[in-house]
Image (cartoon, rainbow, N blue to C red; front, side, top):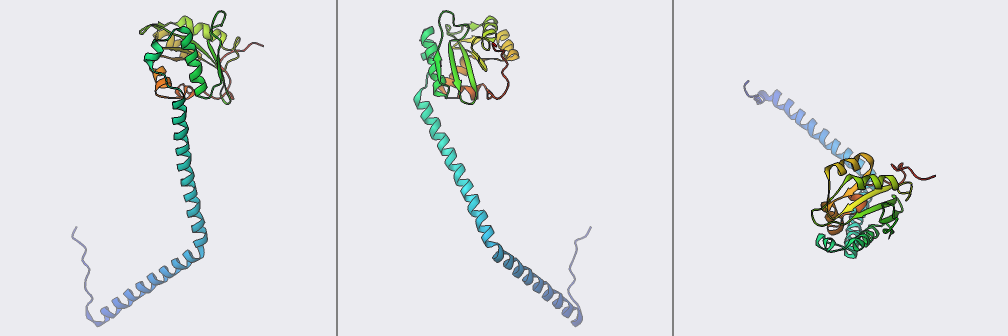
Length: 224
């Protein structure tokens, strides 16, 4: 298709007509601009209020993010443990270290491990997420935790400890069967890599494991 060409007015009549049309367009544009200006003049208090509100929301979000970063720095400064430090611990020290990490993350906790601990070495209580039962398995580097540990924790977390969540933590690894069984039956597991993210990098345990609040039904049957 050829390009559309605008034909120049021919004759005095067409020139006058074109001038009238152009003048009408200018008048309409001027009236539109005037009307828009009137609307803005009438609405400026509302627009100002909206702008102030938007600015306040942005400022609040910035302050909240800064406060969250500050709290995170303070939480990490409270306690940070490396994998090398875990490896150098004995069983008892490992349990106390896990207790301290729970406290750091907002879970008031106590070590209960020892004879007759019924498959829980640390018990913690969170204001929103309820009770957690932690079984600690300190191993030599490269050691693996098997499914039998998962069975024991599953059987006692609710009836013996009234827990909403159960976790097995090791500085080693888990067998494939143990991890699969735990995921099917609600027993969380923290292996060497997750332990590093929790203790050394500073991820909170409940965020790392995506633990729900206690308002959701527990997967563990409790004693009557």
